[in-house]
Image (cartoon, rainbow, N blue to C red; front, side):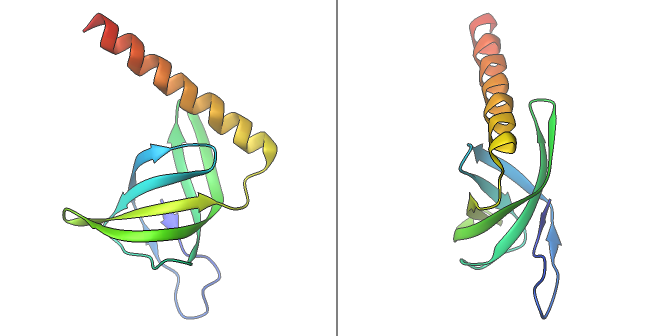
Amino acid sequence: ALSWPGHALETREAKATLRDLSGGGALVASAVSFPAGVHLAMSFRVGGETFNALGGVVLSSLPYGNAVQLRVEFTTVTPAERERLFAAVAKVQLEQAAATRTA
């Protein structure tokens, strides 16, 4: 989920699909466009871990099929959250590699 917190004129919330994820940011596909420079709060689940309201800023917003692809840089992730994020991403990558070997 993406939200646009603290915006003076409106608060928007949108479901999004993670396309790529790292300790520094994410690439997400969303039906709702957020302009570059907008600060977001991102909540998602990956590798069995839940991350709530990670702060980020939209670096770019480009058309992606019937959706918009947002490139988001994390801005308020604590070192502990970043380590947890690295571990969750590594877990998913290992699971995907194991599945590929057995297929």
